[in-house]
Image 1 (tube, rainbow, N blue to C red):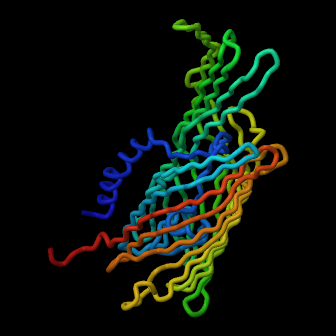
Image 2: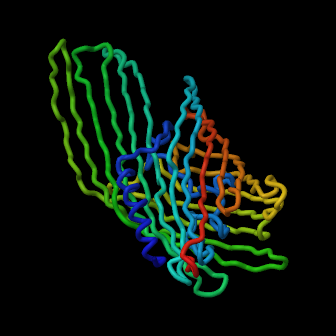
Image 3: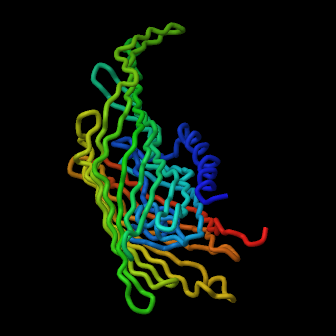
Length: 427
């Protein structure tokens, strides 16, 4: 069976059922910050780079799937096929001036595969989360002549990205790549108002959601500068030019008053699947990587998204500002080809990140700082790897009535590496 035929069959058996499942699948989050914008934005670093602060824009390791930069897909041996998937779990403690709360979430993270289409084009495809929403916020106000009023805000949803990307090397040591992204998912925002002490006041409920579905492109480049003694430096850049996505907005607002077994209910506003675009931010990123082959890799990234210019249903949000992220990470392998010591073959990783997130409340931007570490455990007699990563950090502040989140995130990913398309001489 030819290379292209085997790829098509694999796409049919894995990708399409997964996409159907993902249409009704929500990743879990419990952060009150997911109420705003597109929710909690997911990191672009997965798998190997999760333990390296996410720094990966310039990484060209040929035994990984690096989905942060499509130019990296060309870093693959001609007979290689890779499949990778990951899950993670997060423990969070939320604290403000009024108290604290804990939450635990476990989620499917991503799956991806990488292979060569021919001798000069490499490809990757997969499914990754873009953002998650999941919050419940209760506010109680004491109003004169009315008494206690409870306002409950809650929402849930996930936006996912199914991508197919290709990379080529038009000249030696220069790789360019592009992804075709299909973004899809649904986010909903709900609000309910209850008059706790005034039984003759109507309660108000508002239920709204928007469904997103559309295509976009992003691009990347990596340039390798060879040095002496099997060392090299890679320079990288990525770009996405403010894609516009089609969304469908639905909303219903109603009032009701219950007395005994009787219910008086009326619809105040109703909109069903009204079409309206959203314009996402311009994305830019740059990275540099120093590599001593099979021993050491050090990555440095800068990532920017201009969320202050993004528009939702024709207007900009008062709570969004530009996102800036700085990440540094490294990997060290004592002796990758050792035949006596398994621990010498393990990849040891560490990193940190500092992110000025896209959320702004008044003059207070929400910042996120994290340190990470982990290992890459080689599977016996193969180039496959089990990756373990842990990240500990904090996001937000207790100032100005905001919420401080201390979190621990644990990631497991498996990279399955195999040789395909070998023409056997003896069957």
